[in-house]
Length: 346
Ligand code: DAH
Image (cartoon, rainbow, N blue to C red; front, side, top):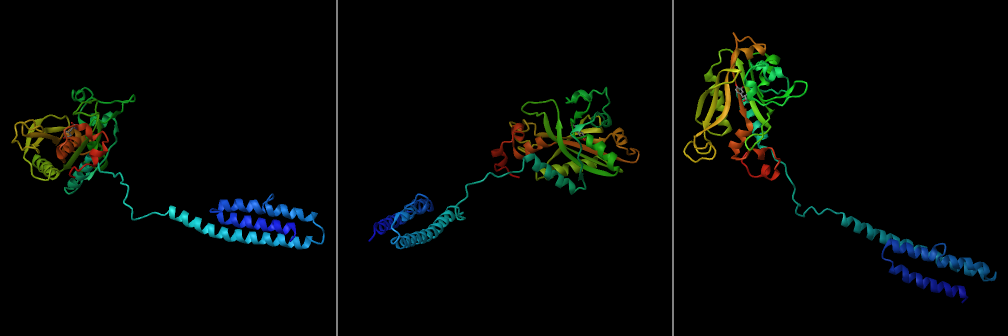
């Protein structure tokens, strides 16, 4: 045996040992480099061939080539097996086990005021009302003037208004939508207008932004009885039972006569002198209303000698507090998700 063949024998043994120890394609690649790379054992021996005597060169060359072929074949075979094992492992690690329990998720909920708004619109749709909306940045004309509140009227002091430098303002109530809707649609008309309103007011029972819901019905021969029927139906539907109503004379520039509606206390029905909701009075103020002032109808482009009607305004946040038993108004504005998702009955 020539020394070359002896060397090849050693190389092959080393290779067999190392290739069977390689447990990843990366390790296999290192083995390949160690034997077939530029400075690999087989390559180095090929370089040595030139220095052999010519008569032994062909046999030695053949022996080296056939070792190289065997090494290549073994490496390819092993690579195929490792690839298979590795891709199976990768697949297994990225597999989703659909039988695992979920990690929990944060859900959404309908805000109490949004839910109430939706319910009220639904109830009034049954009485023929449709939704009308108006801008929150309002003109003095619609917020005051057209509602029979002229420049010098003391009622302007009743409402602490946010003004913009150009004289426009954040609407202080949803009543401006009355005139806007009459001008747009004429008579007869039945609209309900929910929306945000703004006043310079902030304490435990007042928020600078709150939600009102305006109603307006204008038609021929409308009476106070129609108004009472409408509002009592609305209250009974909101609180899911008939409630006693009490009407008190009041004053609003845009209605004549003006009335305030109280309903029996939804908590104690007047039976608990220490009731925290009605403070023992047995009554809750829920709406301002009245027969629409002829001046307002006229500002709405409608002839008050032919048409008349009624209007009301209710505070949605207050109604939501009563309906859902809240004691602090602010919880409605704080985005307290645990509360909003808690088991309040909707
Ligand atoms: N706009 C009144 C307010 O914000 C509420 C109101 C009272 C609206 C009587 C009406 C109404 O439509 O007729 O206090």
